[in-house]
Image 1 (cartoon, helix red, strand yellow):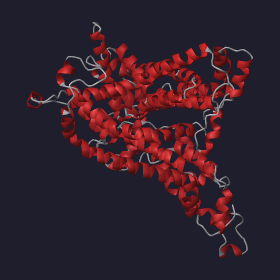
Image 2 (image 1 turned 120 degrees about the horizontal axis):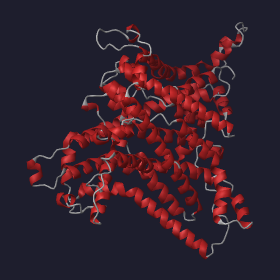
Image 3 (image 1 turned 60 degrees about the vertical axis):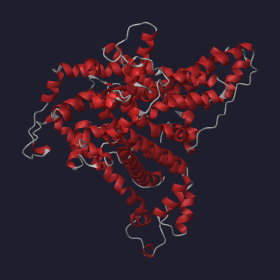
Length: 307
Length: 316
């Protein structure tokens, strides 16, 4: 993907192309308007599923049963949230998941930097051999069962480490990090070394501060994949107190039940309680998304540059 | 790399290049120690577990993987005679090909026409809203799916409000596949859109201008100037997806499936999970997984070769 190579420095490309310089005639204007409408429609369609879930979670039982809820709440109430928050200790799980996410991001980032910084050196002996050793793992996937047996051999089944250690570093992200480190002029390191800096100090005080945008992006990638990850919990965890929000949500969706007394004087129905739990699980992501999506957009383009 | 100035290097150099080199760089190797141990333990060591595919798994008696009895290719034979295995393989191919045919062109189409728009606001808003589902887990997306497509979901609400009959989107294999593909596009279109937009933005606008001055219509410019410029990106992504046609993620089919559509929803990844981790048949499931990995690697190598033949950059 040679076109995006210029993003290697870790910045999103500036939009170089504003317009083709033509002056819009009537047909051109109509064209712009029609396509604008088209894209507004597409954007709305993309958002509707999320709106719908949020609306159902706030709607009343009768409105839901009669099928009157479309994309806006009907018969506004918050009964479903009382039930959703009570079931499965939702807030506690949320705190635990956030903590786990931060731990995973920290572990992943430290491992990634420790590997990428030496490999970014152009004249490191064995460097390319070690690189090949890493890259091979991207293509040779041992498969679910051997991976499971390995995790079991290390005694990690049903421990929190099963969610942190097996995925402690992504080679793909390591290559991105390495590319970022490569953009630093090595004469900086040389100067530091003459001043008596150790390699560790050079890494933390020179290389890391110079690559903060890439580090932030990768840390966010790691954090989101831990937050959304469910596969490893299904494989390695079977005690519900180690479940993150995602697994708790899965259980709630599968086994929601409204007792007769709960149902009699509230607006609860399985439908809106499910919607409420989905909304609660989405909420952290929806809140941070506007602030972090810029980094992810950058990150995609970093990934498009091959190491 | 120069060595650090320390007393030791002042002595005559008897061991050649190695000593001064390592004296200056040992810290770099020390940094890599933990990650390398991690890669050995969690990326290479599990590969030894592949022998499970050729052994008879005995859960009790405390025997290690290596002490269990060899059975040769027995599990592979069993798999090839297992109609459920073939069904899982077929479903994997069907679902992946559907993603390819329906999901692949859509973001390209969006990117090309979004790029023609002059309004930065609409471009930003489209990107923002299409990219959002990418950050939701498949648990959440499966929950959203039933809010949209279930008999009491949004679409059937609309259908009934218009006087129609409810459509069994989630209970009928054909419809279920459609929902699977649709939600796949919903989840991933924004991601690909950004890749293509990035490729388009770094295009040289003067080419398009020249074409305009020469009297090319808008469609001619799109077809003969814009599309060729993003062709390398398109073919790289296409080849990657074709190479992965036998591998399928676990989360998506696992979360989207329900008891009524197992005929369409049982894929290799869920088959391995059901047989192995849930059913305890580690040996058989390992054999199925190995078969999939081997076919997958062969396909990726072929795809890579094909891409190099076509004059594009390889993906490996």
